[in-house]
Length: 352
Image (cartoon, rainbow, N blue to C red):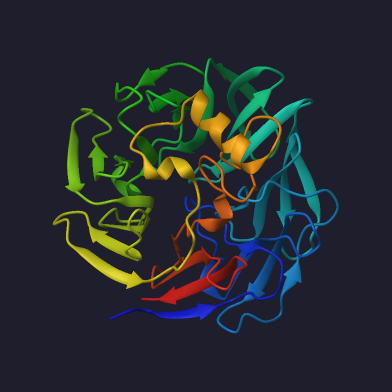
C-alpha cells in the first residue's frame, strides 16, 4: 500500500527540499525548509507542516546554492552557501552571519559535524580543487587541496575529526582528517564501476553506497570489507539514524521511492514520485567522459561545460531538481521529496 502523500508547495516556481544527505525538517517536524525560485533566483523558505501554509522567506538578495542549506544541531540556525561564502542564518531573527568567505571560490553544499562545532564543504578556489573546513564560529578555516573535483564531503558520525569525500570521477570514496593528514582511498575502482551517492550508514560509522544501477553496498570503515545489501537500482540513498534502513528513489526503471532493510535486503514500497529523473548518464553504468558532456552541451545548446548542477532541460547528471532526492523527517515517520509530476517541481511529504 502506498504511503499518504501531501503536496506542500505550489505555483509556477521550482521548489524543492534540501539535498538528500540532509533532513529538510526542523526539530519536532512542525515545519520544513526548502529552496524556491519564486523570485527568480534560489532562496531559502520555510513552511508549517502539515498545513503547508505560513510560508516565510528566509534569505534575500543574491541567490543561494540551491542544495546547500543544512540545519545546525541546535535546531535554530541554518547554514547555506552564497557565491564564495558560507553563511549562518538565525531562523527566528533572520540575521545572517558570514562564517567564511574566499575570493574566487565556488563552494558546494555544507556538512555540519554531529557536535555542531565544525563545517566542511567542497570548493574550487581559482583553478584548485579541495575541501574547506573550519569551525562554526568562523575560526580555524583551512583549504585542503586535492587534484580532482570533490563532491559531498561529510563528517564521520562518531569520529568528527574524519571527513569522507567523493573524488570525481573515479576512484570515488576517500577519507581525510580535518587537519589534512591521513588522506586515503577507501576503495580502488575504475570508470566502469559507477560508484555514487556514498554516505554514512547512520550511527554505525560504516559507509553505504550505490554501484549504479546494480547494487546497494556497505563498506566497513575499519576493515574496508564491502558487502552487498541488495541487488537493486537504489539511486539517491538516505539511511536512518540507526543504520537499519535505507530510503532510496529509483530510475531506469523508476519503481518509486522505497525503503530497504539493511540486515535482510527486503524492500518496502513507499510511494511513486512521478518525477522525470532527467540526466543522460543515468542510462549508462559508467561515469561521464568528455564526449558525454559534449553531447549534452550540444543537445542543450548551452555554451561552456555542463556540470551536475546545470539547470538546462536535460544534462549529463540532471537537472537535479527533476530528481526526488528523498530524505527522512526528524522522527523518521515521514519523508520529504521533490517531484515535477505537475510540470513544475514542488515539495512533497509522504507519511509512512
